[in-house]
Amino acid sequence: MKITEIFHSLQGEGIKIGLPTTFVRTSSCNLRCEWCDTRYAWEGGEEMDISEIMEKIDEIGCSRVCITGGEPLLQDDILSLIDQLLENYEISVETNGSIDISELVERDLMVSMDYKTPSSKMNNKMRKENLNLLRKTDQLKFVISDKKDYNFSLNVIESFDLECKTIFQPVEEGDLDIKELAESVLEDGLDVRV
Image (cartoon, rainbow, N blue to C red; front, side):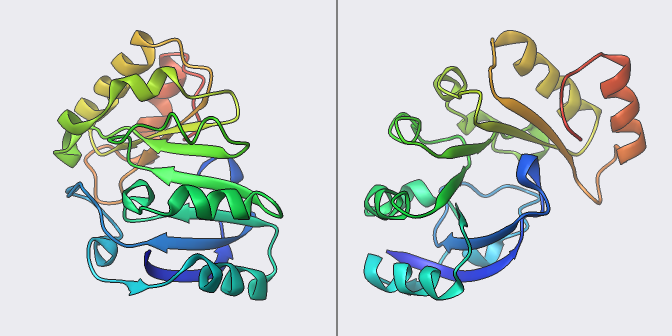
């Protein structure tokens, strides 16, 4: 499978923020989000087999592994890698929400799914069926750039009976700063993390 990088760092977002984690960043993505912060993973990468990936992860020796991208679900062997990792590691998989996640939710891992907002220019690529598959142990992330994104996200939350944790991630250069976002969340009584 194509891998952009494998590295050890602190989780920078979501419900596991701050926890030491090994990141496996796969290459290739089927979306082109306007504000993507990992464009370098859209193409390229190094071809690695599962044993090479496992060896690097084992060398790092961290109990948590986050598989991210690009879009991990585009990799042919991703489920085989996940199954091997699940034998010894706590796994999370970050996915962009455009590909069926039904095989992920059958496994003992955390799905971290983005749901693209209008500012990404990819919101029409989302697979709404995935929202009904998310469990209490999973998380749903909306990247919020402006009030339109906020209202879009609010509509999605109100339209689905979500069990998962929900995160509103502000864009640094967005038109809605974190203070305004926090005020809106409190005013609307939302049970989301900002």
